[in-house]
Image (tube, rainbow, N blue to C red; front, side):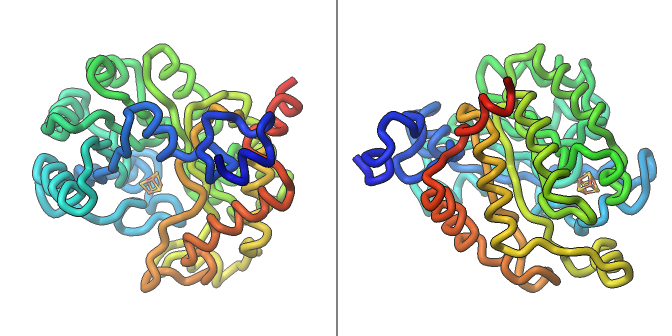
Length: 322
Ligand code: SF4
C-alpha cells in the first residue's frame, strides 16, 4: 500500500492508482482491459471544415499545419496501424492496442468513406478500442449509427474538442463552433454505448480564472467519461503567434496553470478519466511559454500541489453539482 492511500484511506477513491490523486487514463485502461493498452495514432488524411472554408478559413488560431496532430500521414491507414503496432510490440511487448484518429477532423467526410477508413484501421486482432477526435459540429445521427456497429467488438471513444465554453472565446480563436453545438453532440452520443471525452485549453486569450472555472463547471455537469486539459502554448507559424505579437495577452505561468488544473480536478467527478494534463509541444516549433516543454515537470508539480492541499479529483464535485 502506498503512502498516498495509507494517508487517505477513506477519501481517495479506490479505483485510482496508488500513485495519483486523479483517475489517470492508463489506470482506467488497465482496469478495463486487464493490461496496459498502447495508443497507435493515425493520420487518415482528413481536413477540417474550419480550414477549407466550409465553416471558416485559416483554422483555429493555435492549430498547426498538422491539424493539431503529429503529422504522421505518410502511408495508408492500414500501414500506419500495422507499423504502429509492430513498433509498440517490439519496444514494449504491447498486448492490447487503441487506435486513435487524432489529426484534423476525423468525421469530416461522407459516411461511407468514414466507414471504409475506420474498418481499414481495425485490422489487427490486438486492437481493443478506437478513439475518434472530431469537432462537435461534425457529427450527426447517421455517422453515429455507422460508428455504433463497432461497439460490440471495441470500446469506442468519441472525442469532441470544446476548448472553452465561452462562445466569445471560440469566435476570437476562430474555432467557430459553439457550446450549444458541443452539448448537442454530447446529447446525441449518449444514445449509444460510446465513451465521450472532451478537450479543454486553459489560458486562452483574455479568459479569466472565473471564465475557465465556469467551463470546468459546465463540463462537470455533463458527466462525460474523459477529459484532456492543457495550457495554451504558442507554436511558430500559427496565427496565434501573430495575434500574440500584434495584440499581446497574458500567458499562464506554470504555477497558475498547475493551480487551475488542481482546482479543475477537484470539481470533476472521480469517475471521469483524466486522459492528459499537459500539451505535446515540440521544442523547435514552440514559441512560448518555455515551461510548457517540461511535460513531466508539469505532471510532477500537479501531483505535488494535490498532495500539498491534501486533496484529490472529485473532492468538490458534489458541492459543485448540488
Ligand atoms: S478544429 Fe481542430 S483541425 Fe480544425 S482548425 Fe481547429 S484545431 Fe485545427
